[in-house]
Length: 186
Image (cartoon, rainbow, N blue to C red; front, side, top):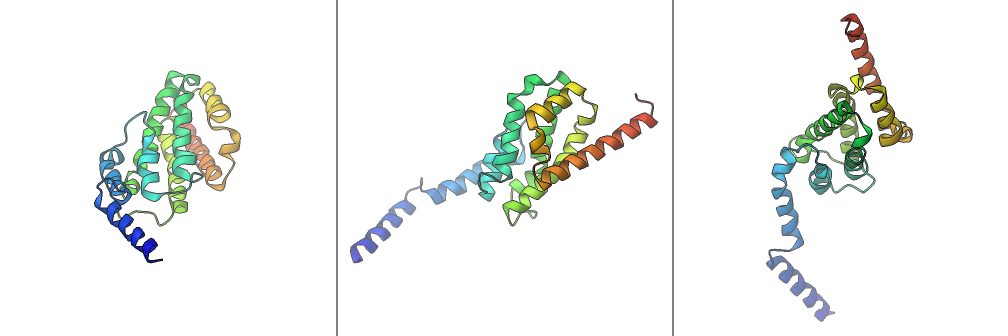
């Protein structure tokens, strides 16, 4: 028993003495990602894994990987299904969604206590980003690609957070259409 305990202490001492140990790497990784996490770049999906997942260590089924990164990459992969206006919307909304999460990725005063809270907040940013980025003005072909191919009906209505974001987005577009009619835009 003494040999095993001594061996364990020796292993811990050697691990901590090496600069490439996992504790050091985790802190270095977070620090080196500060620039990326404070200023997400257009057409980049790494923010979700490098900034949110690294900080919150959520399960693979939580928002950073299962929703944020997954759909960021899906939109990029299926961009050719969108018109030029749809592609511009996609780039703008992807950046908007990431920028809305920057304070949380940096761990400021608004840090989350749980991955569930992160999920709730992140989904809450979707309607505003979608509408402000121009979703309501996209041609029907883009709506069809987004709803049926890229995102899918099951995703839009598959969870409470997704359903709530879908309804809030529809209300945002309704408000835009009423304003546009009043202003005789159409």
